[in-house]
Amino acid sequence: MTIAPAPIVSRPSLAPPPTKGSRLTSLLRTTDHKTIGLMYMVASFGFFMIGGLMAMLMRGELGRVSQSRGLRGRGWAGESFSGVDR
Image 1 (cartoon, rainbow, N blue to C red):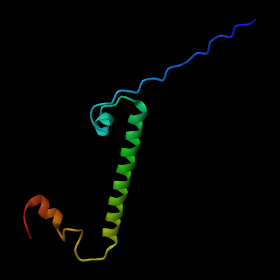
Image 2: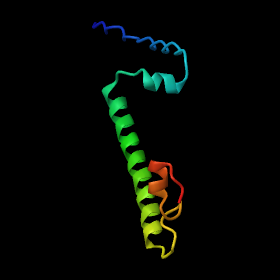
Image 3: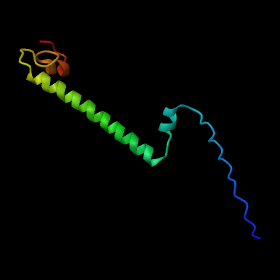
Image 4: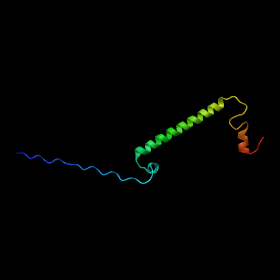
């Protein structure tokens, strides 16, 4: 007669305690290198898109044939830096 060992019953792990604060504060206070790397990639992509939008606006402004130069009119740089309105 053989005696079979009793099966090992594992208990379920406890649920992690709820964290205080919002998701934004947990992102800003994290030290996890994967989360920080993801935040760097998202920020760099966002700035890349903003830079591309600004470049398209400048190209559109330079491509337009007009007497006024830019969005502020002719001579805006001199007026801006000297304070003299001509």
